[in-house]
Amino acid sequence: MRRLALALACALAAPVAAQTAPEAPPRAAPPAPPPPDESLAATEVARWTAPEARQGVAVDARHFYAVVNSRIGKYRKSDGAKLAEWVGDRIAIRHLNSCVALKTELVCANSNYPETPMASSVEVFDTRTMKHLRSVPLGVRDGSLTWIERRGPLWWALLANYDPPRSHLGRTHRDTRIMLLNDAFAEVGGYALPDSVLTRLAPHSVSGGSFGPDGLLYLTGHDAPEFYVLRIPREGPVLEHVATIAAPIEGQAWAWDRSAGRTIYAITRRSGEVVVLRMPEVRPAR
Image (cartoon, one colour):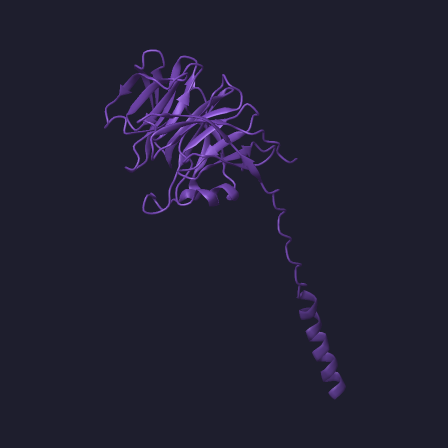
């Protein structure tokens, strides 16, 4: 009887043991991207005083354009002399963040920062006369427009978000994103920023951005003296951080001088100066 009871107990236990799944092996961590090159530095070439140099600067073959909120100053590149200015309605155009010179037009990113909900527009000016030509309202978005640039058939633009107390609807600097727009300014795609850049932006966001002659995207934050160099990935939605370049600037918006190779015009906002920089070559690891 005792043997029968033992056999019955073993038989009843067998199905339970068979149904017990073995423990799954721990998941392997995804491979980490190669670290960005941190050894590069820009070289200062010249420096000009410009009271409007508080938000950013644009540049073309003969002039640079210092930008602050609802004012733009036009200066001669050869000697830094001020030639003209545009002063706008501080209510309608509240916060010009940056501009880029495209042929005879100055295309500028404007927002209602720090008001909420976040609304933005693209404002276009004639570089010859400094007259306002047209406005493209982008309406309420999930961030403030800080820069916009044409590349191929699309516009690349950035929507900035900030940590408290400048956040809105619970968003933080990590919600900063790049959007791609077609000719009708409808959003057709976009990219996220990598953690290695987002960490350096906190608690602010990206203030300036533009593609270099090497096809890489260069970004600056709110006040850090450095550029972040990013590559468009072959796959996936996150840009690749390939280098950080030290520079004698204070973040904010800036522009490539397309007439002078690897030359950038940037600003130091506290002193109201435009800084001309020679940028080093960037060779991303494959």
